[in-house]
Length: 532
Picture 1 (tube, rainbow, N blue to C red):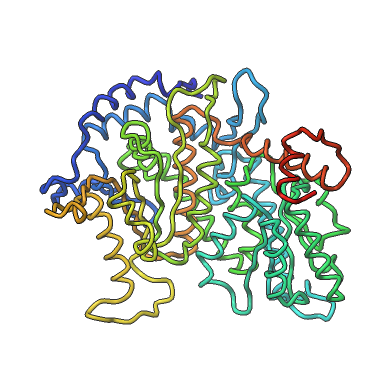
Picture 2 (cartoon, rainbow, N blue to C red):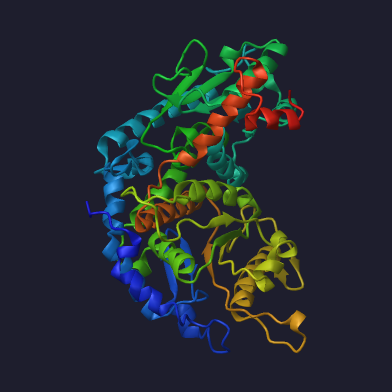
């Protein structure tokens, strides 16, 4: 594998610093001629990326290609997919794990890059297919012999955000009489509200935790078990588990069925494993989940292309690095013009910020360059009537990534003033990209738009299971490639752990099993919050 190189040592970075002193001016009257818009377009897996509204020119693209080559980004990507230990920091204790979420969708390959991991994925898919067939036939049913109509997924973080986002995105394709629900927050009001809206007698509860000991998940599982018992139902007939082999949850006496997740698949990258597969397979059908995997697999292959102009994940990664490290943009807005992608930005928040929110390089030294940006977003056109004011005229420059589709999912539309609702949706998306780029001069300074604000438009034909899989893998690979370039470990999350440790101390004090010094900040906070 290519020797890891610090970002600050890359020669191409120096060239990009020079180019960033006079970046392309999008606000010029002639900044977006037809030939630029046509040339600055890349395609893969049914998606077109329109990036003419980025502050780049051919010289910047050439330097970004040099950056990718010098950092060995594709070599690192291939090493990851082949099972190299990527989750490590040189000279320091770390998880020392492989990173093989892509093996879950390499099942379509005649020569999988990580054969053992792909064989394990195939085994789990076969188990899922058999289980779903039993649910469909009624072989798996409740004590009254009735079929199950709902699956409630209980998990948090990567065991919730990705699967929930994918289900909401593809809810249109769910099987007749099937649906999914989710509980993540340890807030008991959330669990109570979700459980109250379900017919528990016909609900399967899917508890997802790799360790089998995640506090929030186990707490919500107990709430669900109590609700089943109150309804006179046997929990063992209603609960399934997705967990690590040998975990406390890997217990056939307590669960109707169990599926395994592996250490080499990180939580935020786990939606194409059984973490997402069980609920998505139940609600959408096994074939729809397979199509989602197929789309992800095709995008994984597209990420192997050497030329950045032909490699969507790599191109998006490098455009993000240009905006972050050389144009000084601290945040990026992901703006889907599809209501079905309501929770996709929330999933990307975790996937990106938990992956690349790091300040130590893989060589064990503090970084001297900016790493992951703040990622956020909401669907358009709603967002246009909310926070777009800042995007257009705020003092902070926020690069935008628009996502849209030419056709709606349901195909139920109406023509008003000569255009359909879907046409209006896409027109608004394209107009926002143009407005941010070109701005507007005006004698009244309050009506003046400076423009020169970068954005890209990612547009597909229709949001199908295949398209959703490709979109998911596009961003997963974009995030990993950026981490490789910044020379950080994108696959651990040590920053999450400190809060858990302190929460355990506070809970111990609240339960009366741990004594804290009266002068300890924890004691003072508990007292000030009225919790003791």
